[in-house]
Structures are given as C-alpha cells and as structure tokens.
Length: 57
Image 1 (cartoon, rainbow, N blue to C red):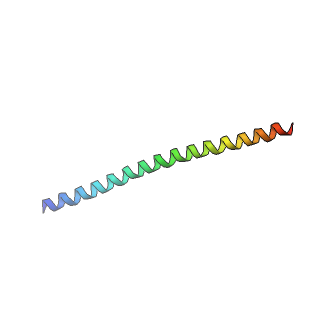
Image 2: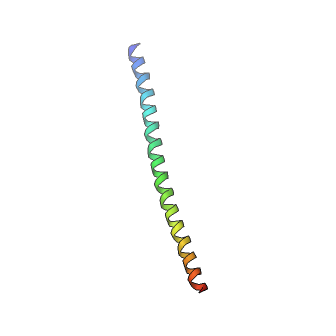
Image 3: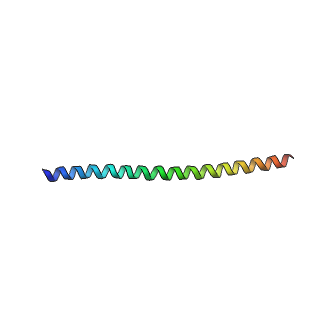
C-alpha cells in the first residue's frame, strides 16, 4: 500500500516537475527566437527605410 502510494506520488511529482521544466525551456527558447526575429526584422526595415530616404534626396 505504502509502496504504491509512494509510486503514485513520485510519478505525479516527476510529471509536474517535467512539465514545469519543459514549460520554462520552451518559453525561454520562444522568447529568444522572437527577440532575434524582431531584431532582424527591425534591422531590415530600418535599412530599407534609410536606403529609400537617402535615394529620395
């Protein structure tokens, strides 16, 4: 009885900890990916804007 209880507790605990770990990892990865994507996009946008601005002169 106690063994099965411990087994259930461990399984639940491990599952929740793994879920939180995966959540943290995925959120960090997505955050860094979005940041790099936004940086690249803004860089391209600013460059094209500056080029068109310079051309208009």
